[in-house]
Length: 288
Picture 1 (cartoon, rainbow, N blue to C red):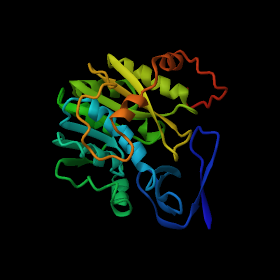
Picture 2 (cartoon, rainbow, N blue to C red):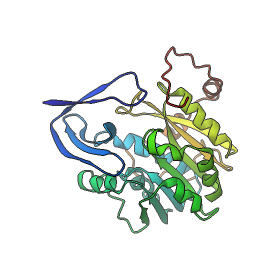
Picture 3 (cartoon, rainbow, N blue to C red):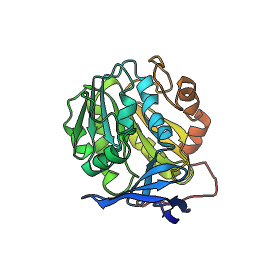
Picture 4 (cartoon, rainbow, N blue to C red):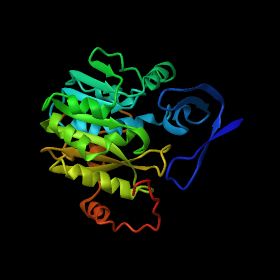
C-alpha cells in the first residue's frame, strides 16, 4: 500500500496516511486537487497536498466553525460563506430554520464539483434553493455586498497564505463590518495554537481594528496540523460566548455546553495577546 505524506507549510512535523486508492487527481486554475481513500479516515480531500477534510472527522471542524456564531446570533437569516468548497459549512448553516439566504462564495469551482461527486454527504446543501453560489474572490464579493444586511459571515479558507491572503487584511475586515448588521458576527479559523500562535494573535489584533467585540475559541481537529485549532470571532455589538438561539439542531459534537467550554479563559487570552505563552516552540510563518 502506498503512503501519502503531508508536509504542511510552517509546520515542523509530517503526517503520513496510507492510500488504499486514488479516486481523483487533477488541477484547477488555482491548485492541485486530489481525493484519496484511507482505511481509517475514509475519503480525504487534498488541496496542494494539504488535508482539507476527511469523511471520518470533518464534522468537528464544520460544526465548530459554524454553530458557535449561529447560536450566538438571536435570529440569523442572511449568511455569507466564503471558501469551504466542500460545502460542509453550508450544510451546517442550513440546519438553522431561521436561515433564508446563503451566499456561497468559492473562488475555485472545481473544488465544488469534486466535492459534489466524492463527498455527497458533505456537499449535500449546496443545491438547496436558499443557496446562491458565486465563483469569485470572497474579498471582492464582501466589498460590494449591501451594507448592513448580513447577519453572519463565515470564512472557511485554506491556510492564511497564497491566494487566501486577501481574506486576512484590514481592508477585508472593514468591508465585513460594513455589510454586517449591528448584531451580526464574523468568524474564521486562525490556524494552530500550537504552531502558529503569532498568526492567531495577529488575526485577533486585525479584528480589533474593526470590531468592538473580539474573541477566540478552539477545537481539536485530529487531521489538522497541531490539532488544537483556533477560531477568531468579531461582532459590532454582541458577546459570542452567550447562546441566544435555542439548541434544536442535530450535531455530532457541538452543543450548547460545548459552546460555553470552547472559548479560552480571560487569563489565557491575556497571555496570548501579550505573547507570554512560552512553550518553547515558535514556528515562524511567512511575513511574520
